[in-house]
Length: 278
Image: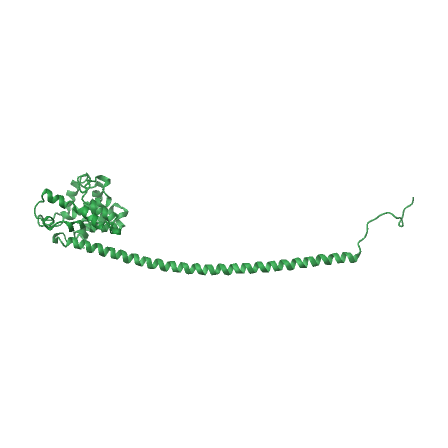
């Protein structure tokens, strides 16, 4: 059976041009709608970002104000702390002077011993050299003597056994006097209570020995004896610095902590002389 251009076989159907055009227009319109939607979303996103930027800038300004306020508060608190520290020093020196006013022969003793003691602490490189409580303890070491009767405190001759027992109560009394004062209740109180303890345990009031004695009290003990030896009293003349050093070395390891005594030995006479006569 012959076939040709006029045969009735099935072939591909052609799409009419109008239909193609309509489909393209529909797709283009869909793209326009999608583009418009994306533009709206973009505008919304930009608006949200701008709002967040404004919010962030506002918070930054607020934080800067907070920081400025905190700096001002810190500055004010620091000024108050310095003023409080000055008031502490004035109070301690007033108490120290009140104690020494009872004995004309020990005038400025506490100030000299404090200066010697802090110098020894610095020679040892210990942190308590910069702790105000250490100096307060040095200055107030004899505050308990306000409760000792004048007849015992100023007795020119040797004390009886009973009188010595009363005198040896002054470290405990001193610690009790300042116990309720917060800025004196720690390291300062330890010096006041333990400044007559001895390295070998023969001191008082607690018979502490060695490292059980607070370090500040061990340092004070050397400074206290040095000042006592180099200061004239009614019952004896002052020793020279060299003589005082020899006496301290002689009882190092018994009366004094050897490390503290050794550190004291490194301080030149010229430095000690300047501290003795400020």
